Structure formats: C-alpha cells, structure tokens
Amino acid sequence: MVHILAQKNSLMNQFIAELRDTEIQKDSMRFRRNMERIGEIIAYEISKTFEYKSSEITTPLGISKMSLPVSKVVNATILRAGLPFHNGILNYFDQSENAFISAHRKYHKDGTFTIQFEHLSSPDIEGKVLILSDPMLASGASMEISYKAIIERGTPKHTHIVTIIASNQGINYVKKHINMKNVTIWAGDVDDELTSKSYIVPGLGDAGDLAFGSKM
Image (cartoon, rainbow, N blue to C red; front, side):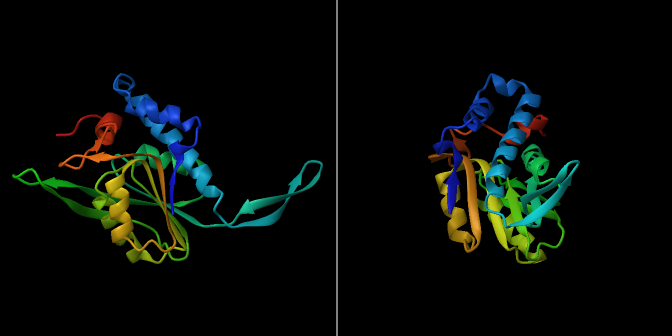
C-alpha cells in the first residue's frame, strides 16, 4: 500500500512547499524544522495503524479508561539527510528504539554511481514495527540496500517506508525489489521526473546539504 499525503489538503503541504522554495531553503534551521514537522505528521498518521488496548489511567479525581498503543517501534533512518526527519518521528514515538544506516552514492568517472553501504547500528527488530525513513526516495536503490541490511536483525511485524519526496520510479523500484508483504510506503509528495543522475525533478535539491551545509 502507498499513501501520498499531499493528495489530501493539510498543513503539511505548507511545510513541503517551504522545503522546495529556493528562498526559504537559505534558512537551514527552518529547513531542518520543516523536515522534523513533516516527520511528526507522518508519525501521527502511522500511529493510526498500530495495535491498541484499553488501559485505566488514574487521575487526581478518578479513573479514566483510554485506548493506548502497544506496538513496539524501531525508528530507523539513513544518514545524514534523514536525521531531522528521524527526529520528528522520534518526537512522537518517543519510546521507540532507534537504528542508523550509513549509505551513500559512490560516483564513477563516467558519471554513474553505485550505492555504497558502510555501517548499520540497530537493535533487534524481530516482531516489531519498523519505520525506515529517508527524506528523498529517488532511484530507490538506497532504500532497498538499507531495508535488506536491517532485516538481517530480525523480521519486523510490519515495515513503514517513509519519505518526504519520492519519484514514481523510486516507488516502483521499491515495490519491485522489496517483498511488499507487510510493507507500507508513506510519501509526503511524489514527482514524475527522475534525471539520468537520479535527481528528483522538481524535487527540492540535496536535502543533506540544505540541512547541514555543503560537503566536500
């Protein structure tokens, strides 16, 4: 299942518009905060899919019965661009365990690139809800490599692949190369074009550089 949240009007569209805007992008702190806020909104939407049970809460004046989530969550992201997005999700799933994946594009002399996987820091994910986030789902190759690396730590009960901007090609690639049983894709918005260098158009540029500064 694929959810594209921008298809329904909400305040999130304002945050995505600011991420895309070349003038507003000059404020890196606002860029990071908008990524974080989008993470919070998507976390809220994901929470609707969790398992819940009735609990009794003692208040100063009595007992209140509430339906509370019981799902155990592992919140994972791909460094470095995913950090503000990850933090937004963590703001809402504040009791989740966390995982971090290091993967990057390794460019060749002919202009092509491969995805270089470097490191994974993750808890056991067996039987838990895995939320795997990356702000841009371009070619889909990074997501495939990251997902296949992390499920070596166990079989999650359900996986939510989360992104802010995806390309149609990236979504189709993920659906083709990842077993979609018990996997849901959440995208803030989806763009049609992907360049020969796998940049999303119109996209928003390099999320990592805009959040943290240009790299060498």
